[in-house]
Amino acid sequence: MPILARLTWPTAAILLLASLLNACGGGGSSAATASATAMPTTPAAPAPLTLAQVGDKLFEDTSLSASGKQACASCHVEARGHADAAGSFLPLGGPDGTHQGLRSSPSIRYLDQAGAFAIDAQGRARGGLFWDGRANSRAEQARGPLFNPDEMANADVAALAARLRALPYAADLRTAANLPATATDDQLVDAAIAALVRYQTDDAKFRPFTSKFDAVQDGSATFTPQEQRGLNLFNDPQRGNCASCHDSRPAPGLTRALFTNFSYHALGVPRNTSDATANPAFFDLGLCGPLRSDLAGRAELCGRFRVPTLRNVALTAPYFHNASFATLEDVVAFYATRDLDPARWYPVVNGQVQPYNDLPAAYRANVERGAPFSRPGQAPALSAQDVTDIVAFLRTLTDGFTTG
Image (tube, rainbow, N blue to C red; front, side, top):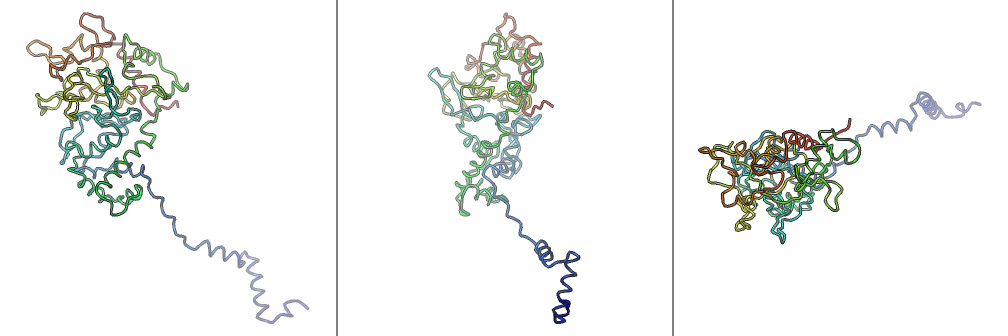
């Protein structure tokens, strides 16, 4: 007898229906799988931000300034080698965003080896951050602009802490810094500064070493004849003598050249007269003030400013601490002809050239006189073609070079 005939009718009907469903792919196990697949799932919670990621946000955030117009990135633009924005004179800041800054914003790349500011037994200053070396660490450097009355202009710690608490990512800052919701003003501000430091320390964009110069050192590119001539002049102590301050070879313990030895020099750059409101009685004395006061009595240091890295120098105009030069060509030509053709660089009053006019007369003996500066009557250390060749080399120091 057929099996179905021996089963009761309800049981037989159920087995027949199951058989038909399996035959057309509708088996019970498949249906269960489909049902499980269709059930909604709870999305995974996003990973908490790291301290460096919070620092990235803070770096770009204009709401940290009293004016609401200035961020760290306003004066340190990534596309400009983390220096001033293109075409800017000096950064505007202050409570209303209209105050004229004192100095050009130097690049904040390649600073990890600067070390703390110090003066050696021979009286030579070295190290530190800012043009006058008054910050001994990235933390001190990050704190400075936040409270500078001509920059981000926070009146005090409480004012900055209030701005930090109002951030849409304030909880991310506290979590990344392991702070409670009841964190004090000082704790919040210290955490924000730590985040800015971690961002600059961890992110490779602040030390990429991706210039053509680096590619040549690695053997994956070659200089043009003009670039090679420029490098030779750059290194020649009797001609360009640039490498005496802007080392083109790695310092001990390093594998890449930083193009600065973090030393301090008085170059006698001309006064920047593009700001019609500038006070003619004011002089920026660098190591001697006005932004640091501990060396005010060291006359031999007045007018000296820290040597910046030349990496990305083609991007970081305007040049020198007072933004007095707009082009690299003029910068190198100034070195070559400062004392041979002073009327090209300094004002002429009643037929008399006024050299080193951005330094009081009492400190002009501090101005550098060695190569490539040439005394009147001497042959120039650099020709016009030499200047062009050196500039061609300097352009190989821009990060982002590709061989393709």
